Image (cartoon, rainbow, N blue to C red; front, side, top):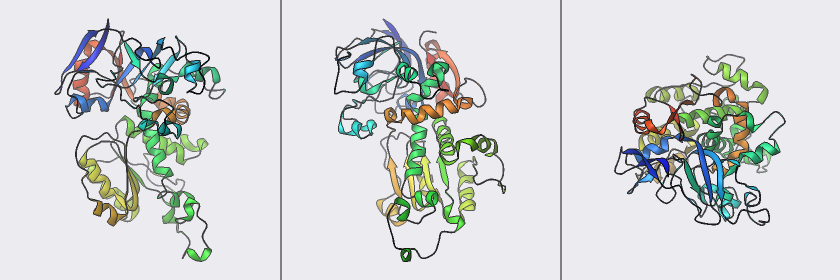
Length: 409
């Protein structure tokens, strides 16, 4: 038997129970002994009764642990399939994205692993979650990331997986990849490229045009990129860090972080400011002379946040909504989007394919991602299952930050 954290509908009912340890059900399965699991904002959708669950389930979709059993399809002779089927071994240390992905379908092959045809989210009745001592991982060869394999290969000579705490590596499951994904979406969008390339559209996207096709050169104010982030929880903070990291040269990043809370100066070419909802509209108007943000990243996952995003974005801007939404209508019409030429992107992060980019950032920003319980840490504390119900309540009411569960404490 094992201890697990379980949710019972309709809402606000968390229990710690003893249930059987999972076993291999399919040759592609792996059983992982969980070392740490995370309590996430996504868990609150179910906790509050807005996640659509009608039966009880083992909670949690972020976990790190050790492989203790593998299905028959894992063997050195496995060919023509994701490489983990030939390389993953019992005893390997692994981290899992929050969704299952086969690694073999069309969506996985082109990198859109979040929409794998076999996709399942951990923490649901069909795929029990990681707030447990053991978890079964379906399609494990396409889902898991073998940290032992990364350590053996060495990301860079100065980067050793073994030097990173499990609490830091657990960020790879969801919040750090999702923040990086959002930043990548904003900066790679065709509507952001004129500001980043200093070339007007569509030349900014590589189209060849005659010089006569551009009326006047871009002015300095045309090259300013303004991005709003709605929802400064851990994922929003990760997006801020990723944006700064992508926008500024690596040798300047330390100086940028030291200055982001200061006022404008002649030595700077960027600024970051934190505000409440009302002040945000005033700040955006002042910064952009009233035209709005090029891109708005929405991490809250509700209609009021989407409404604010529409108010902040400029004509020909982009809204990327990464926050998980309940079953409610978008608070504007197609006509409103059309009249403003607004692009609207929704959906979850393809975590599995983001690992290489995210791991590099995780190494370089250990001052933020590497510690627990400090003012600049994303993780506030590590607790046992014995306080799970209380921790959910505290997290729901905003009285604590990111919390990790140690199933063996």
